[in-house]
Length: 313
Image 1: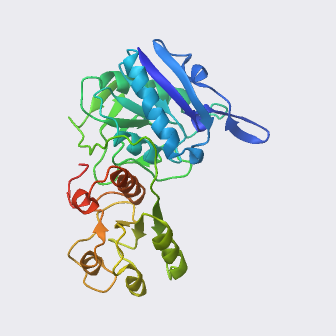
Image 2: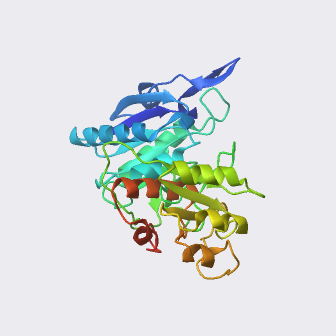
Image 3: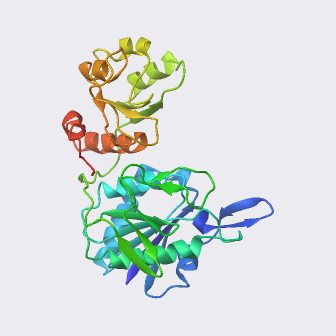
């Protein structure tokens, strides 16, 4: 028996003259498949998912395992899938597979990928039962790790990619083929609630000083989505000097790693590190925020955490 837990999203939507809205529950999604226990957790668009909801989802997944489920399939919207999957990845200590699944075309559209993606997720979940691959994400016949999956296009069926590290596998002719034997994960203890605030500031040309000041004054930590290999404006260095709060520098680029020892100008990685800023290496901005949040909730030293250059690969 497998469990399918539905959160909503395009995969649960149908459309009328006013547009697409969530309308299908987990039973609707699972009715074409055998030996699936279907649970509707919510029916919302994925921008509305919160950390507190994901903590509840985590507990529900544990309950399903205790009831005998051999794998968990979670359906949600694509907009925040990479963050939801990575959050669960960072807390899921069981060897039971979790597979996230979504769709880019709802069931009222021609060429809908809803049922195909659910079918591929079921095949992947069954095939991953005796493997240590962590949380997986399956769309468009491609199997991604939650560590690296990224939504790269607003409407294309092949929107999801895993920059730099590639796919975990593919589903071909009804069979899952895995390219990797295991996926490295950093596992945290699950907090009872999220009490910390971690900001994410995307840096842009001539970025406003007051936005930076607001984050520094009102948040427990701040992740920068920085220029290039992880840089900020020279004039902003004065705000981060002597700041005791954790500051993490990621890159706003979609692939590659942050610099450590290349650029020496004020605002680049060498001066940032000298002022206590932690470089995120290959970890994306949104996932660096999740790691920072969970580290703070677990009282884990962030500098030690992020300076493990191979933290999640």
